[in-house]
View 1: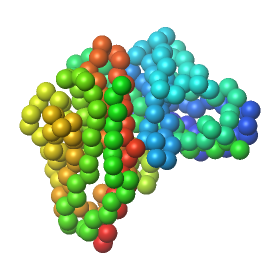
View 2: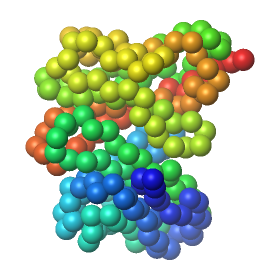
View 3: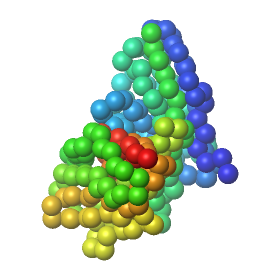
View 4: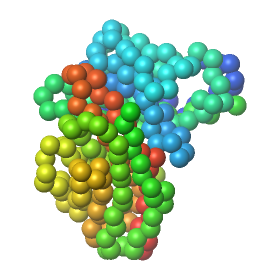
Length: 115
Length: 117
């Protein structure tokens, strides 16, 4: 019962490097999202997707790109890493339709440090 | 815009005692959902309890219960018989009932709870 799987768990980047954070879910959830967690700021939405081929911006999208080619995968790309992107990143998914109070299912997070 | 405020950055409680974490929110909507998530040191985000705004009855899940005051826009979490495993960061979250597919959760800044032996 894998749920939401994020890789890697830890990553250190130098300023200007690019990388992709991977997220996969095996629950056939249509909705997927990326959050960043910073001390004293809670979780803030970066991007989200309501299905394959559909993505939209959240609260803090600058510096990040996403795509959704399959229902299962929702990678987050940092094109040119900056120290301000040092954070813990969470991928989360939920099913759509039915009861709207279906909770978000979270991955275990990726701790990213940009030096 | 909706906001969620958790005014207690840190709290502590003795094992077996009861503790209440506060959460207030600001919205003009009448139909929405509220959640409490727990984040232990393992960093995993775990759903603790949920409440639908149209339900007047407060939600309960074993030792966890909420005091939902819709008019006051308050959604506090009560943990009874606190256990060492309850030590975690607790996040309050608001979700507005919008068009199907648009689920924007607004999270509070969290309350770090430490249960003392």
